[in-house]
Amino acid sequence: NWPSLWELAVSNTSTLSSRCGLDSRIAGGAETPNSYRPNVWQMAFVQDCNLHCAYCSTGFGRCGAEARVMHPDIWLPLADLIVRMSSGVPKIRIEFGTGETFLHFESAIRFLDHLRTLAAAGEIEVDASMTTNGTICTHEQLQACLERGILLCFSIDGPAEDHDAEAKQD
Image (cartoon, rainbow, N blue to C red; front, side, top):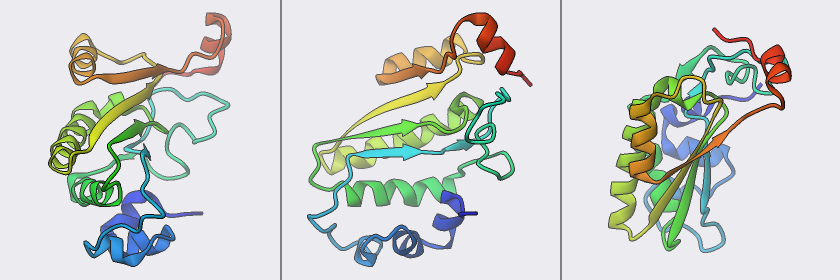
């Protein structure tokens, strides 16, 4: 039973860094050690899903917790941490997965736009991808992904009859 990212981050970034086994100087604003400069960040931004697939290893995106979304009081300092830790890396990738990001698409886009603004100041390019079941994406959301260069990964579980037998929609 491990704490969620925002439970770790809400206490403070120093605690987040130490629990993740990272150098505590990172959270304090010191330069990131050369030995660890991540270029891929996997985000469990949304812990929820509109489908309830019987085989889902994340428990419908919830990882054993209540359904929730990462709030700005968490993702603002997280964006700072990502930029500091990725200092000197020319390009990073943010991968939104685990839950159905399109349930809270606007919040995820605000985070991504904020991160890209911070990263641009540090001359870091930010690519992004979202894994989705594709059942609730609107035309406007897809257009926003296209405009921002967000790659979409659709989880399709075989022929329609097999997929529909496993995926129970809310």
